[in-house]
Image (cartoon, rainbow, N blue to C red; front, side):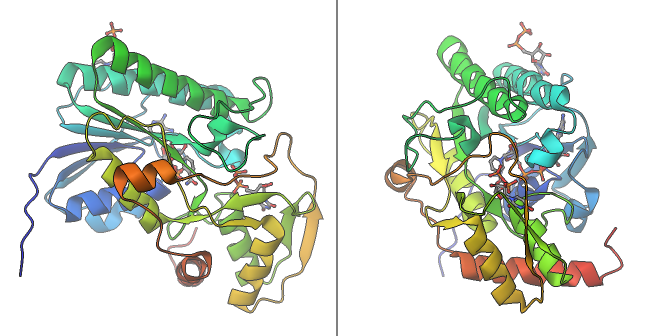
Length: 323
Ligand code: NAD
Ligand code: UDP
Ligand code: UDP
C-alpha cells in the first residue's frame, strides 16, 4: 500500500458554511489540513459544518468579510458571497460590498501573509454570452445596470483586483470561474433551479419554469467541482487562471424539469412563470484549459448527480432538522 503524505497547511475558507464551502472544508480536513471556516451565515448555516464541529483541525468563526480580518494562515479560498439570484438581489448593495470589499480584505490578508489565494468567480462574468461555448478569453456581455449587475460586476471587479494584486504585489493568485453547480447541502429555499425543482417534485407541487424553459445551463456535481478547485489551488504558480470549471453537458431548463420528475416519480405539473430580467439564454463551459492545465474533467453526469441530490433532499424534508 502506498501512503501519500501531504504537508499539513493552515487554510482559511471564507464562506465555508455555505453549500460549496462546507464540502471544501470537509475535503481539506480529511486531507489532514487545519481549516479556519469564516462565515456571516447570510446564506450559509452552522448545520452545514456541524459534523466537523468537534474536529481538532476545524475552527468556525462568525465574521463578515467586508470587515478586515487578522488571522495567520498559509492559503485562502474566498467563497464568501451569496450565489443564488434570489439571495444576491435581496440586498444588492451588500452583494457588491461583499464581492469588492471582501476581495480587498482577503487580498490584503494574503499580501501580509504572502499566502496563496483562490477566488470563487463565476460564469456570470460572461453575462448573457454571445459566444458559445464560453472560453476564458471571452470578455462577456454584462448589463452593468440590471438586477444581476450587483453580482456580475462585483465578481468582475473582484477578478480585476486579483490580477492587480498579482501584477502589483506579486501575489500568488488563482481565479476559478464556476459554472452552475448542484448537490447535497444546497438550502431547500436557496432559490436556484436544481434545488427548487427537486423540492417541488418531492412535494408534488407545481414545478416553476421561468420563461418557456428553452434557456440552457450545464450542471456540475459538487464533488467534481471541489476536486477541480483543490487541483487549481495546488497547481503551479503560473496557472493563475481565470479557468472555467464546470460540466460541459448542456440541458434546457425544461429538460431538467422532466428529468427531475422522472427520477422522483413525482405527480408535479410544469407551470410557466415570467422570465427574470437579463436571464442568460445559454451557458456551457469550454473546459479545454482545465483539462490541459489541471488534468481535470467532470466524472459525474446529471442523472447520477441528481439521484444523489434527490436522496439528500428526500431525507432532509422528512427529518426534524428541516426548518
Ligand atoms: P452559498 O450561498 O451556499 O455560499 C456562500 C457563503 O458565503 C454562505 O455561507 C454565506 O453565508 C457566505 N457569505 C455571504 N456573504 C458573506 C460575507 N459578507 N462575509 C462572510 N461570509 C459571507 O453559495 P455557494 O453555491 O456555496 O457559492 C460559493 C461561492 O461560489 C460564491 O462565491 C459563489 O459566487 C461561487 N459560485 C457558485 C456557483 C454555484 O453554482 N454553486 C456558481 C458560480 C460561482
Ligand atoms: N487587511 C486585512 N487583514 C490583513 C491585512 C489587510 O483584513 O492581515 C485588509 C485591510 O482592511 C486593508 C485591506 O486588507 O485595508 C487591503 O490591504 P492592503 O495591504 O492591500 O492595502 P492597505 O492596507 O494599504 O489599504
Ligand atoms: N429557473 C427556473 N425555475 C426556478 C429557478 C430557476 O426556471 O424555479 C431558471 C432561471 O430562470 C435560469 C435557470 O433556471 O434560467 C438557472 O437559474 P439559477 O437561479 O439556478 O442560476 P443562474 O444560472 O441563472 O444564476
